[in-house]
Amino acid sequence: MGTESVEFCREIENYLCRKNDGHLIRVTGPSFDLVSSWAAQGIPLTVACAGIDRYFERYYRNGPRRRPVKIDFCEADVLDLFDEWRRAVGVSSAAEPSERQSRGPSLPAHLERVVLKLTAARAAGTLGDEFDVLIDRVNEELDLARTSPAGVRGDARQALIARLAALDAEFLQKAQAALSASDVAALTREAEDELAAFRERMTADAFATARDGALSRLIRERLGLPTMTFI
Image: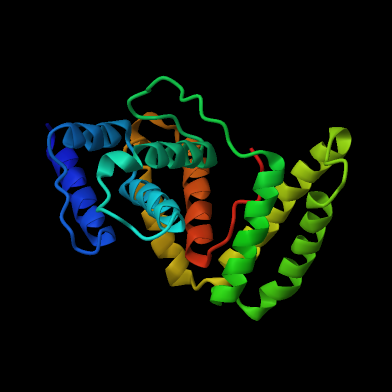
């Protein structure tokens, strides 16, 4: 077992302890093998932690916690988030596992998530006033699509998907411009760290594209923005 894999498991154990309000759940035995497989696949630590967060968010929504969460319970969320991350940055798994047959949300569910996350970001104050007009315009467009009695089909559906991609690019451009140069530099370094497990087998152009995708994800995460593009 490599040192990097052991360190990865230790970091996951520490993070899980914090999420469990200090209650220590050891990552040993089969759990250690599970988390080690995440490291072998090249799952970035930040992505694994975000997957753990996703499980805890759902756990809290279902009512008061009854017992500490084991890392095994978070596996599906970690792997689903890793799939999303790989699609976003355009890389394949370091261990080349068989393709997971997970399906993303439907277009109506995606629109619902976008609107809710934009509303939450505005309420949390992570976005400046300069975003208000853009958010209002996006919410108006998406509300029309969500409330269409016949749904969005055919050419209208394809046009909406293209529009979502354009809005996503517009938000990202505005979000990056709102950050300081030092913040963008720090996030770029973090994006490169996330891609460390894949860099040796990527061309310079492929790495640059993947880094841009990872940077976009980190900017969204910093400001609480949704991914508007529908894949």
